[in-house]
Image (cartoon, rainbow, N blue to C red; front, side):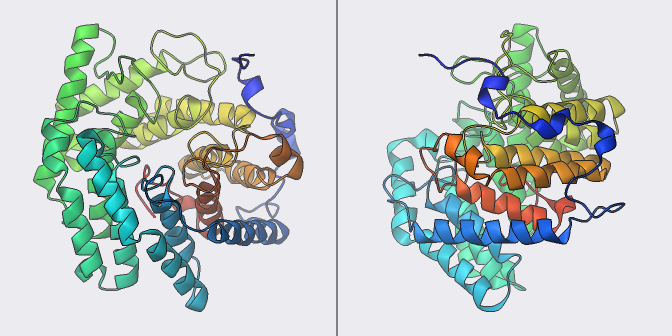
Length: 424
């Protein structure tokens, strides 16, 4: 029997979303932007339990799990994130766990995968490029305060850059999951860790290739200043579509300082505004009318990030309003039945609510993010949720929840959706 194609069918009813605004925050100290101590304690308990659960699951078979998306490298990323709020033996244990998850067997399996399927080489989420980003992050954390001099870091950066020429000249995809947008993020993230890791000239070359590709396709279709196709479908969302691509373009200096590039990006965001549905959601694909997906990968969740960053880059009030309308959709329909993950689960919804908090500094969005974090561990919701195919992974499972909880507890104003927003 086919699953129902409605927003309501894909999510649990969020009773709190129906409450009047006068009800006020549920989890904050009155009159502040600070979580109540009982909420903090509950979230810390959930974080510790989740980390124990993931750690006890062990490593993923390298032949089946050498990618950031569902494999050991993504789980390693979560433990590196966890280490940022730990000290002493606990911190070292998390770093050791991450190192174990990035074993030579895992690295070799990832590289071998790219030898068999060259197009996977530059993929941030599903290829060895992403694995090397996480390996660089491990070297960076192990080497602090002289991280850029770490042999592990330098080796990983060089391994990452071996896929650059293929990404620019031969890759046939511009999206984030498999294509140039994801590879561009890796370049920018490595420079975030250690400036100069990837030259500005290379970043400009890659980003301009993405811009030219989108402009040419947009001109052929007559739809948008920038438009892209993946597997013959014109996706709109963050994972495979134009929202994710323009988000990555807005991260890089060569685009932000190029008037023509900025005109194209802004025009594309304005075009996306015209596709907003009555639920303040977006279809997954251009030309569709269904808007039943409200995930990070498709729909309003990704729109929060695209319009949110657009509002900052262009100082555009209309883009901010669109981001907040999308966040309201996420608040209403984001208690997803697909589990705790960040790609199509509750943690991804929570990150969108934190983005709304960063945009506005309105504590109601922090309160809502905390509410999602607590409900994610509700026994009834868990019992009625689908078990992800990869339940411990970063993008489908509990490792994504670890990252979300760390960001919520550490400094919500610096929260960063893993390997999408710039930060750690």
